[in-house]
Length: 250
Length: 232
Image (tube, rainbow over the protein chains, first blue to last red):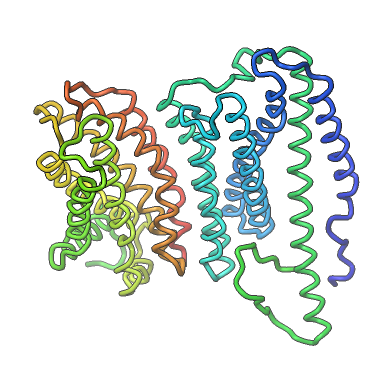
């Protein structure tokens, strides 16, 4: 029964190639097509990496919360896996956004960290909150309860993100460069093209990595099930505690 | 009592709340520990900062760091007695709404927090605070403490319900509650800053609105999600 099931991740090749192409193209656009910014010079190029990473991170966290809602509604473990993957990769992208933001702050203001920049500070708080996701999962042994509590966390944290942004923004003067104003953006056209292609690249990269992580987890679960059926063991064998969601190969 | 009609949510809530308060009255644990912690923390701040008097932003920060960390002690205890003595199982067997437990626990935590907040600000005013607040400023301070404590109580009860089922509940409580409470801390410290300054100032409504928004959002969220946390 498990052998007739198609392997996970077979159709990912096309997505992976598209991602590689878009990411390469967007890097090319950012460095060779987009003009050098007048005030900040070459260091402004990091904007094409930092801002897409930050936007994709927030998107990942939001989707983590949405999949959490779906898990609580349906109780299907695939939603738990999606929520877990979105938050896991979001956290990694968040580290990237924090590091690139810090480098940009050093280049623009001469300091590695500036407290009067609300977006960066909000990001740090959000990062600290989401850092507790894995320890929380790890400290709950029962897989069903782990999934349920992780979903509750994903929803609470997802709601916390905008509340936190409002609070931090209120508390500090506004000096962050506004790249996309409410009036549709103050970017010149060539910069905007480079920025949107970088955003697309980061989004594709996020989706591809998420899909690969889910495929890997599914494959591992199937492999474990096959091993068990070969060795003649039956029943559910726990492979030790884990923060990752438990997948039942069916 | 006739077995046909289950007790209302209000009755269940007040029964659990009365139980919480009776427990604390007969064997004072949480409230005394929080109060002692706060008083000691203010003494520690005196030595750590090397100052006899503080005012303004520094005073506001000292007060709210103390209150937040004291709140963590209270949050860590919310479900411990029920979990150890089987109170949670007993509650789940009763034919009442589960949100009654959330409301009662949040209310009892709120009462503890307000008590500790009142006591701590008095001790703080005597020991460390430079300027003497006027009656109006005391009133404004009370409003800020109540609004912030509502948020802390709601989020704290939610976090406590998550943490009680984990093996490392003390660690999970602290690392989960602290980042979630940062917006409360921002609003409360900024609102208290002019009240504790030398010249003295009024209350800025935007921080009160922010605290109110936080209370509303996390109140609704806790109400919606609490059932999933005590399902077993």
